[in-house]
Length: 64
Image (cartoon, rainbow, N blue to C red; front, side, top):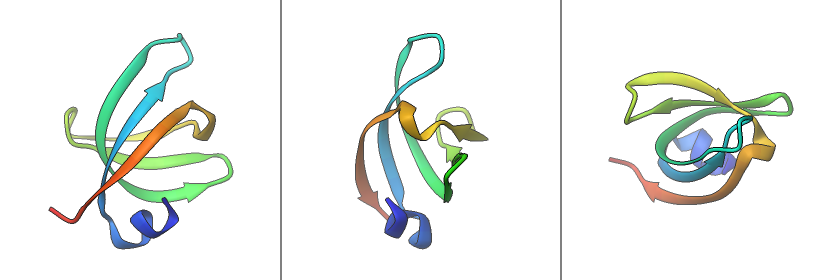
């Protein structure tokens, strides 16, 4: 995921939010830090900060 962040690649995530809801998101990772992951969510057309522990699965999709 660090390489995907460096290259601004599209990533598909399965994410569990704080309320226990599962979501599938297509995002571009901008920062991968200890306190969270900053992404641009393609579906919502907005920047989001995700908890690292909430990311259950991730698949790199490459540049698009």
